[in-house]
Length: 93
Image (cartoon, rainbow, N blue to C red; front, side, top):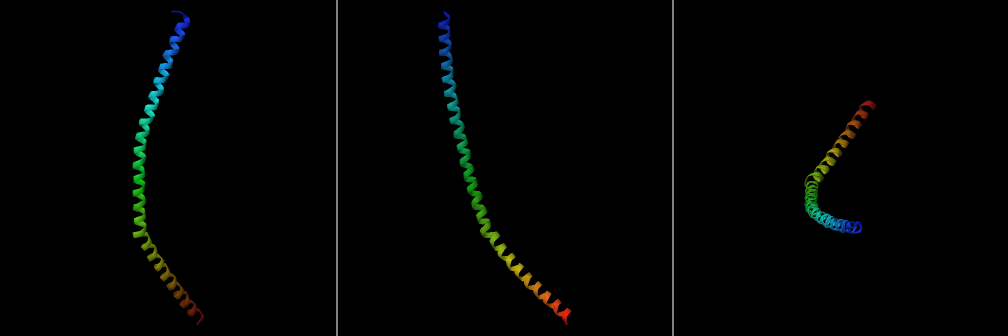
């Protein structure tokens, strides 16, 4: 076997190995993509569930509490106003 034939044989062997490695990497990428896609889909479902839960909590709990807090704060301001008026009336009188 001459040096040129040996060179050609190595070129063919490395070409076949390169094609095999490329096919392997494509298959591996495709399998990883399928798994990641399933994980991402379940993540989207979880995010949607969390979004609906926070929306429900906001509608049913936070908004009523905020309005109650506003009313209590308003009453506190009225009482503060009345008490400062009484103190001013006692000082001036």
